[in-house]
Amino acid sequence: MAAHFDRRLRKAAVTTTVAAVAVAALSASQAPDVTADGTGRQTTSDNVPTSDTPAADSATGNSPYYTDLPPLNSPSPAPTTGTPTSPGSSEAGIPATVLDAYKKAESELRRAKPGCNLPWQLLAAIGKVESGQARGGRVDANGTTIGRIIGPQLDGNGFALIKDTDNGVYDGNSSYDNAVGPMQFIPSTWAWAGRDGNGDGKEDPNNVYDAALAAGHYLCRFDWDLSVQADLNRAILSYNNSQDYLNTVLSWLEHYRKGTHEIPDGTGSLPVGRSDDLNAGASPTPGRTGANPGSRAPSTPSPSKPPASEKPTKPGNPSTKPPTDPAPPTDPAPPTETPAPTPTPTPTDTVHHLENAGTTGLTATAGDTFAKKISTRAETKAGDAVGKVRIRFTVLGDTDATFTGGEKVAAVTTNASGVAVAPALVAGEQTGAFTVRATVVGRTVPGLDYKATVTERVADTLTSTGPKELTCTPGGEFADQVEVKATLKGAVADKVAVTATLIKSDADPAENDKGPYFKDADGKAVRTLTGRQTDAEGLLRLPKLYADDTEGTYILRLTTAGGATLDITLKVAEPAEPTPAPSTDPSTAPSAQPSTEPTA
Image (cartoon, rainbow, N blue to C red; front, top):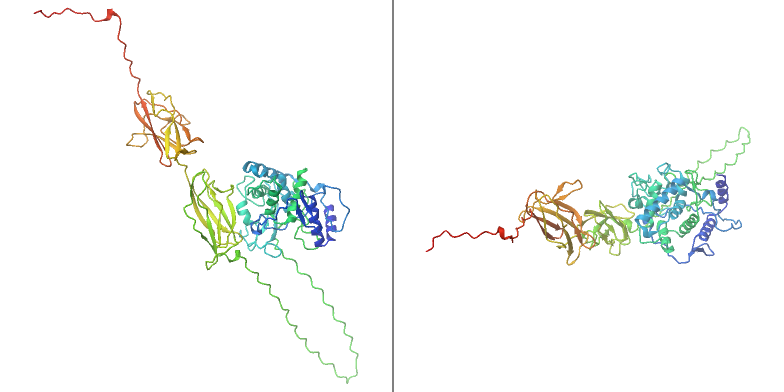
């Protein structure tokens, strides 16, 4: 802790401007492919542009972050006024539970989105910059922070303006949003990005497992490959849109890639040097614990100069006229208060409601892309279009349908006509109805729901690839198995559900109660099979058929969604008695008998 105190004393001598430039230059010098020009501005070798992510649609709302830097990778330069010191190696360790959360999140993302190539070191770098690894690993056994980590309220006073979106549930602020938790999510982002990382059935931004997994999914929400520097930069900038932030995160990422070590929970260093510290290097409060309205303490007025001591009146003679009472002082005019300028309303502020921009008939077959896209129009109270407003589309309900790219959330900006068109919806294999909800990012207005339906895959033709008539003796089993092929307009129809039923007759399609049957897992007779699907070639082979003791001719009817039907004939009968061959033994031939008829 003495090292922290010494560093804070050194920081106190640095002006805000010099410190900011120094941090930018030093972080740039330690980030791969990042350099700084003579004024401390950063440039990148591949000229990656700054992200256009609005504050309300970033993970953190572009909240303040901590500017601590890892130990220098090169020999320390000579001390220079304003050069921030890098933390020592003891501060580079990662608390055990926090480290475990990062690695588990990486493992899950490797499975869910292997093309993203998310390294756990990136989560560690962001966690370091956002909260100092959950304030030095101050978490309980389940990974939940001991005390909430809450950033300044985003009231537009030096920060972005994001009005309350969670009724204060996460940040305790019902007027404005604050970034929350070890990965500093704003509530409006957590509402769709939140994940349950520790399997307790809750999505808690204050839990390091939940927050780390949510951060991983957030960074991988587009088609970015984080092993590519340009995509990595874009992902980090979408988390917090600042070049200084990008460089600081890249510095820690490079440091952790070179190796780190595990330390006990609660023994990590407290974060210092937050980017919004405007007090000329004064030590910021360690951590962002508790709601912070962002207000500053009023300056203490200088004490007024005491009045000069009145000289005692020299006693006069008795005839001296006593001095007259001084005139009462005139009340000073009350100070004139300059009213705060009324902020110019943004387009988002003028949105009164959302309207359906002509989306109807949202239906698709399982596995297909919906032919129609969802369109939403943002309007004022008078019904005028509002452009340049972010609309968030969220897939809700028990469904595996997603937008193109595999995400259940997409944010789109309205055009000049006030219309935002969501990415194409892709149906999963799960059939049934679900909802897509459109909401305004950064403003609380009623959402607009769209109903969508996923239907079964269909086939219009079923053909037998084997015999169309099978035979069996009573009590035996059929030698052949039924195999069919499904097609749709002549093309292979894969993953089509086929129902097979042993019916009573052509005129009565009810299930038969006698004759051939299938067996279930327990060996019991069943005469209807459901849930069987054709393979990639459109083929389906049914299980073996068995016969009871009832002879006769039976029908196995196969049907699919789309109207395909095929009947297979099943015959159960005793084998016919073989006809004996005529004998060739003359002794057994009938002898000729003499006629007893009288001759004429």
